[in-house]
Image 1: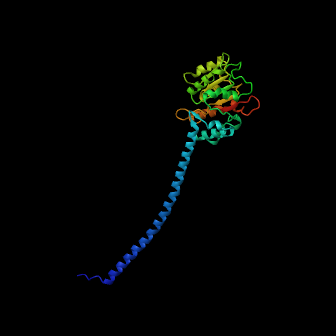
Image 2: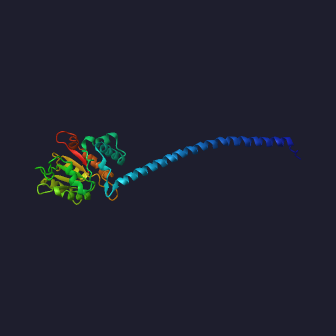
Image 3: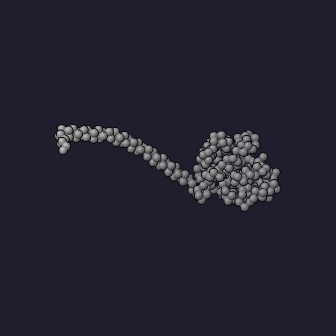
Length: 279
């Protein structure tokens, strides 16, 4: 028969148990205290993300306010300095893998741009002839062309072939038998057909898209010896609210075209100068 456990021994065991529970409770408190600051840290982080989201929304609202009736009005308010920076920023956004060297190679210098911010009329196609007249030298006859075939004095660059076709129609007032407004875009016009046109026709103004113009320059049929101005149809936006600077497939080819050596070397030059006009 086993002996009963003394009351004192039982009391000691209960006391030890209480102390152990008290110690465990004390150890748990720092963890709770640590969790509180962590929760506090989450607060500012969430607030920062919310502020960033609100800022982006505000920027989008501003952009939407500038874009209406198929025209991005903000483009016409940019001078040469702003345009040069805008071109580079858009390139970086559309192709994040561009290195600093590659970006520099396709950067258009500020000196290339003629300031057209003084043009107060809406930059719609109906106003394009008036725009060209305003920013051409006094007495210049835009309906004249070089004696050499395929040698325009003006190129107008649009994002898409359909838009370029509309540009051709808008510039018909400058066309005559001796100076045709050239259709230098791909819609229903094969590259070989465009080459043949430039080889046989005198054209004062050519309207086209970035890649097609580059291809024609590369072929040697489009000559820029007497080119005076490049007009970028930059204010126009399509039904999806996209302009020539908003799409990788148009903006990057545009930059590569504008920075070709035969063009770039003449920006800001005193002799045989080429200027870029933003319409």
